[in-house]
Length: 510
Image (cartoon, rainbow, N blue to C red; front, side, top):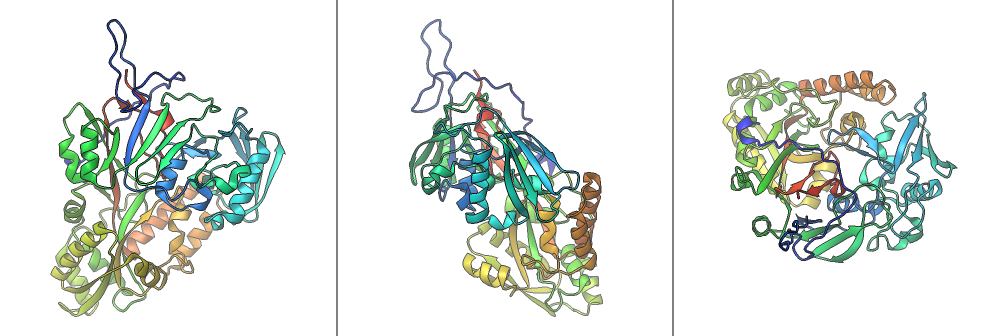
């Protein structure tokens, strides 16, 4: 991405105050003080969102919109910092057995649910028993063999098979610890140990969280309001009118807020990636030279500029730039239409002789736009592309699961470890909709998942990224840039490589 297009705002880590000050409950704006008095600092953060959560039970949801809310209501045993490094949360410490077959968590001694019940080891065991048996993501935890309360504040997890990245499982927001005594009503009446609890929820209007009275860690924000505003233009207006403190925007709107001291713009690479997948089992695409030609034929700079207004971090493999194991694989296939034509000729295809069907999901306009730009560039290189725009359900059934396609443009959410990201490239993986097969890749994935040394795993991750950059079962486009605009008085805003916000770490300048 061009440096001139990206405004990176350095985040200042502030010491958080435990006392919460007065606020204007209607607007959250500073209250006018009488003569000789200091103006009160607002303690309500208002964030615009485009859709409602699909419920507030983290075990029963796969929706990012849910986790962005529930991550403030519940806690996970561990969480992550902005770089994806595991840090304490409900557990203030942990230890992993030398053989990697168990992990023991030591719980924060003062943790209570928002209904006053103590969150001890037995409560954690009960929550994970529910997660393992009823969760929509229970398969993610298939390696867990047992969960045991060793004493009131200590929980041990043992694994049936070695999972060297198991610790990250406990950081995702769907692994939150819930009060199972309230399990039947968690969807609309959540009970967790997080800094906030539900105050009200009017679907399609707003959802309000207030301080959990039993949460004892520092926090200077009293309440959080999620305001449902589907239209981005309306969100911008609400921010300008002082009705909202945080919005997320697209790159074309950044110019409205740059160089304006009333606002702070945050432009940050997210934990995700966007690509054009190739079905390597299809005629033509089963030839490495053709896949290489496609990569040479696409001008990524022009693509990112045209579709995302220049806001994107180019990638050369299936790995987001925000994770510590990222290896820079850009530059292997610079834009070179002449080299693309040469490779196509070597593969036996003259101009217009290679015809490919590109399926694009109608629900995601940015992928439709990207596919159209890519198709035009491929056609300039002599590849005939037939675009088919399909409904999302059809894309899932026919393209992703049925593997009935040549090309498709889509995005993938990131995970916290290389294995979870790259396991889809195992030749036998159900998620391997590329139909990609490489014995070395299969062996490296197996080795990674049994290697307990972190430095050695990083080397394996780098080699796997290199293989994908060489074999190019996809045109790897970018790690998308997330752009947020906040009221300049709001401090401590940050993004994380999982779908969470940490409102308890924010504050308003006095």
